Image: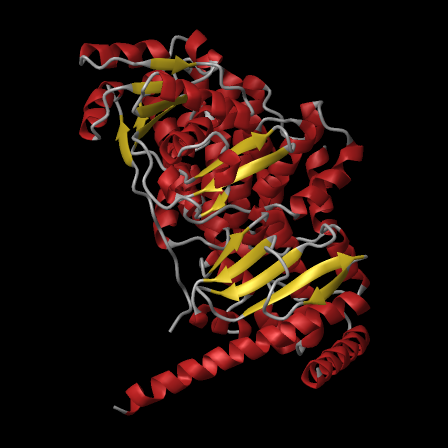
Length: 181
Length: 395
């Protein structure tokens, strides 16, 4: 009986968590593209105006970023100005929660068929590398190791701390600007 | 509770063995098809491989309404449109694709157009676009390697845009795959070797990459055993129809395995090398396999060690200490490649191909990094890593 009452609350909590994580990740993608040369190099191979989406099927939470040129991303929130070019779609809220709560690595989630790629796979591979790089920066090493296939050996603490601080500052600023607007 | 999870799907009826071609009329009848069209290439026709298929159908009173025998090695949207037009004009109601990967992929793409309508197959590119079953479709492979007869993907070149269009849907799978040893008896030695090593690589990567699962493992292990046991026998005696059947079955089994578990870095490098240097796919697979296994070694030591049983047999497996089995598996594959080089000069290094320059390695590494299969490689691959593997494969 108790379990039946708790289940909708747990589901709602998962939904809110995934929505919040998408908002953080979207802003963090924009931020990391402003501070990290490696990410800029990866993004520069994407066409200008390229729209990338991550979403929960069928009509769940989503994040949309655009490559605005020069390796920089712009976070569009959850609505795209036009049809997206590449969409990574979680088949279910639970699958998104497993990945975004770092219980399942992104690469494992792909291997487990938790996600679909709609669009050019090579761009999706590139965006996954960007997401891995972002996670390696903003998560403590012990958690990042649960999120990415392999924690980058050449990412040392000073670089990680400085970059993470810059990214978090930019994310917080963006949240405040959005709230004010 | 473990986080393990997998999906496995293969609804293709496999019709294999002696006189398998003679089952085609019955299978088409069961699908209410009476006016089949054959899609194939000139090489298949010149080798006389259509004759037993046509004879098998005629003996059962089934007329082959149309034969398109001009599929190029890299099929295009234009070819697909032309074949679909002939299919409609001749009022065909089913397709039999006979050939290697290109003819089979073309058959899949034609089936999209003739089932869904229209002239532009590019509209259906991507995953999950098709929403309903297509026309009756049979596949008769004439090489033993690609496994295309059991995969739900087709790749067709869009000539106008100069890009390769992937089509992915379970509806692309044929109703039946007909594996008849007569269809591979005349394969030349170097193609026999390269395509069998393609099947071997499908199976080895399926068994060692990230989406491996108990069902794909079973198919992969059986495929490796068949290739290890039969390949050199067939190379020494090309008319060995039992051995040919073993290789053809191995190819289908490896196809079932990898289409349910995906592949890894060998394929990423192979796709890039094929695109840049125009080397045949099977050759690239054979070439890169040991170098990539060495790169992945510490992440795949367990499953790679298990494969020694299927590569070398129980005596050598039992005599090899568990801690050395992974290395012994790589050695077994190297030994097989050396034996193939001795018999048909199947290249073992990029230099031996004579078609790759050292200056191209950077471009190959960069392209490989964006290949979809790299996602399923068990070890993360950076540009530097890919370049290092290529350097080892150079000479």
